[in-house]
Image (cartoon, rainbow over all chains, first blue to last red; front, side, top):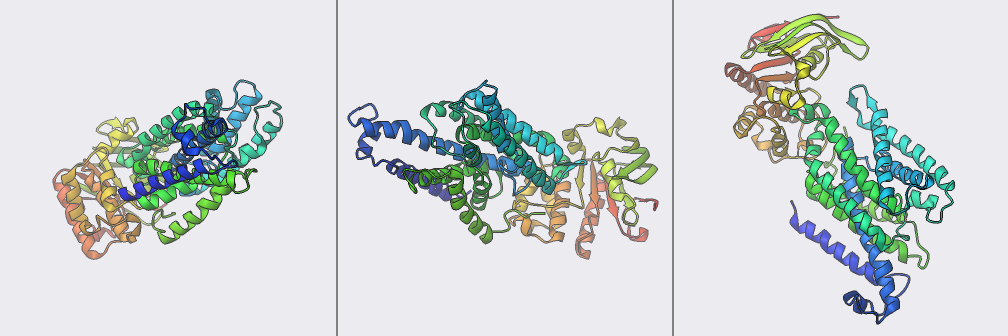
Length: 332
Length: 204
């Protein structure tokens, strides 16, 4: 494994954190004083912006980016398909629908553990539905899975749009939030719920990762070697749903990151899924933090949808890397 | 012994084999022959526990094969399928490591590497290998598992004469050691003198 590359990504993340702390719609004149003396109330304006808005948002971007990076590894590994990502196999739309349905039924509030629970249920049901509909006799055909996943996602996303327009609660999010995502509404309170969910999700992904190495040889070879492909896929989908639900219920749907981060990580660290989970999470965190800093500063004081920025940053990186090293994942 | 009685096998809508019986003995090489589409690979899938027969019974040591778990079967039989594809850029060494999930060891892996002449490929990414090299890696994975039964689906399809001779010699050695080897082959019966039993499937 290339340790130096890991340290480069960690350094980039630290630089991105510094950048995200320093820039924003308001210029913080006393940034370093309020950062290193959080209990002092000397510069109250700067203090409130930094500790109540900027830092929670930075931590959220890191957690959500890490979630989506690891989720992408689970989606691609479970489906044995380089095109799979949470937004394609139905997990993101399912999680969004789960949260919106919970809000409509008035049983959860946004950002709560209950909302994430609804998101996990929705994401898991949608992913399992995609797998079930794509079942081609006794084999799981990868191409069929992607086509069915796109159709399932589109159908559920439409239901999310319709359901969202039926909710009149003050804390309900907009259609644009569920479609493109935004970190603008995150608060420090969200982190207490999001953090354990991300840790559990990445832990589950780490646990099942070695089995995904074997699954990449195909279902029948996996069985011949002695690994149950159905059980492995189910556990990977549960990890995927937990990771995606935490992120979707907090910041809405952010597509592309779950596709790009695993590919970028794979080019640097090889195909083994265990190191891939951690490095894809790291790269996801870097990309989302830079994207969010861009989203809130490029057109300040207005904000751009974060999904647009992740696509702008991730797509060229992905295309460049994949063109230079096309034997990383051979499509059958 | 693997024993199949009055088997009917179906692929899709088509019945490929009907009322067919066969015994696979330890210490013997059994060749399954026949033209394209006669059901050789389907029979191999059924005998290795991958495919449920439409009718008939398959037993392994007097116990129905479908009562064995995936892990138990992996300790009893290894399979090299004709359609083995490698999508991720693992090295050949990593691929061989993965095949040892339930059975096999360093010695059996080293024997497999020697028999298939793939020592020089160990550090290569499996996705960059030729079709013939990939097939040799697939066969090595099965041999490395060191199971009592070994199923090989058309193992010589993409091999040169030298490789074919080396693999045949090694399979004979395995049979002498007590392994039950089943080989699906396109070859004519007279070119399969190195096998103990030749089973020709009926043309449908």
